[in-house]
Image 1 (spheres, rainbow, N blue to C red):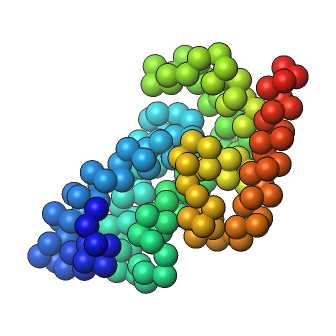
Image 2: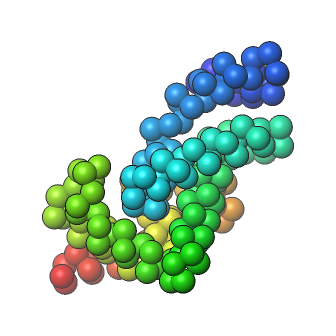
Length: 180
């Protein structure tokens, strides 16, 4: 994408806003879909969260202060939208977020959009057993290959804490993969 400050000005300018937002969607749609999908696990839910994310970005771009990269700001919105979606779904079903995640995990094998094999499914089960923060850190670092500095901006957590979370997650996943 072009110079970020220039691009943000295009997003803020009513004359260029729609065209700039189209560029933003093209640039971020696939990586955001992948990111959200690792959190909510279900294709249809991922599409809903992705749409909500873009709506929120469009409505709130004027409040972007430039203290972080645009990428980090958008990923923070997507992450929060995904977590909120799971919590809302759990509340509607009078269950916990973990129960909603486990239900989606159990349905993952039948999902026509899931392209993984038995090992990938086992990895997803191992990840589902992690505490929520470790899940997020592991998924963003492992699947999206987001570096610690960007993760720090997205999750508002220190780099050291993120490294520790990732390390603990990897150890627990390795243990699960070798045991089951």
